[in-house]
Length: 280
Image 1 (cartoon, rainbow, N blue to C red):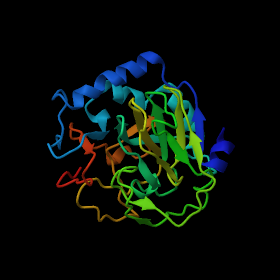
Image 2 (cartoon, rainbow, N blue to C red; image 1 turned 45 degrees about the vertical axis):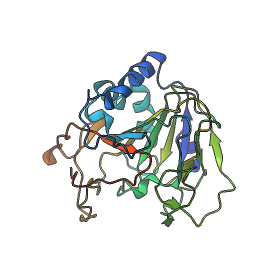
Image 3 (cartoon, rainbow, N blue to C red; image 1 turned 180 degrees about the vertical axis):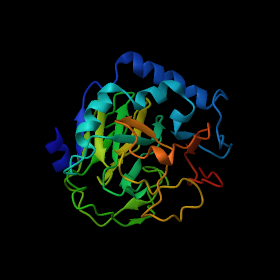
Image 4 (tube, rainbow, N blue to C red; image 1 turned 120 degrees about the horizontal axis):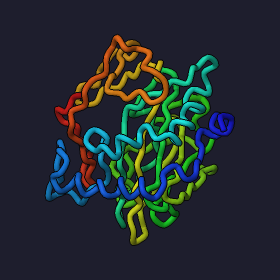
């Protein structure tokens, strides 16, 4: 398992969630729109609909529980620091996202998650769990195996494919002939490195393609990541502490763990991401 992940930058694991867990998460989705859960930026009339919910674990206990799911932990404690000779298996989580992607909604162009969540040791791992069967028709994940190996962050630029992709910039400058399509059954997951190039296309089916995504990293690594308008930080020493220890104890107990703001952030279709003054 570790060698496959080291070589290709991703790993598919079947049956991470059982049907009951999937149903519990799906039952949470309406609560982000009906006022049950506090939302920083409720949808506006000009928005075309909801693409994703950021940090749903901050308010949803069923989603929070999945961060420490035993099947996820068993994989993470093997792969997160597989490239670090003396890694002791400790893992922390810093983010969750709930992607809804209804029929007709766009995907996201080529990108690397490490661009958005920088780590000090290249240990970022995304865990993308299908809540519906993810297929070619509804816009499943696509990856370029091995594109993580050199730890290069590719340049980005705006794209003009507004029907195919959301407004996020796209990475460019590489050959994508080796793209692999990853179709998944509901409950299965893709574990992928933060430098791995990946994308998804528009949902051209008549059903939703929902997915829950968590991000993890080596607990020993500082996390020079600041959410909000003020993103200028000392990358060498800054350590974002709104985290959840997942495998092993927090190696920096003296730093403490920050309390989350108990409200989520919505990503609508139709607008650029605007974090405004939400600085946590």
